[in-house]
Image 1 (cartoon, rainbow, N blue to C red):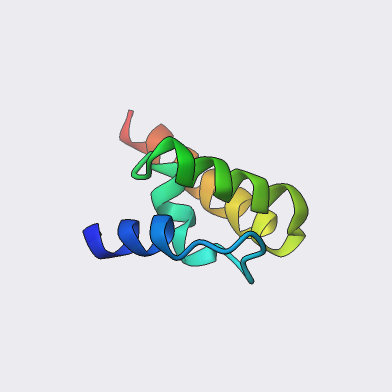
Image 2 (cartoon, helix red, strand yellow):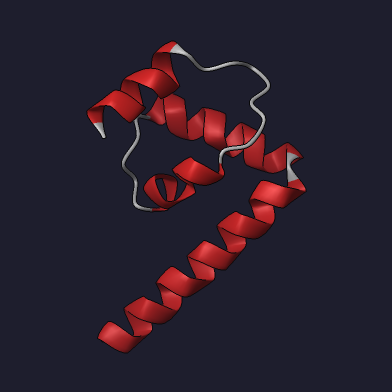
Length: 68
């Protein structure tokens, strides 16, 4: 995970292709505020990643309900 974080911060491009491989970490709050903002900015413009995010978030919420 440490390598992933350094790649995101050091190698981030203004226009990423997609962020799907980082969405789970984003949901779990595993990134710095800078990286979270960049992922959020990408999600605003990318409907494909938005769909993945919404699906994973719904799954996480369902699992949380089951765990309660």
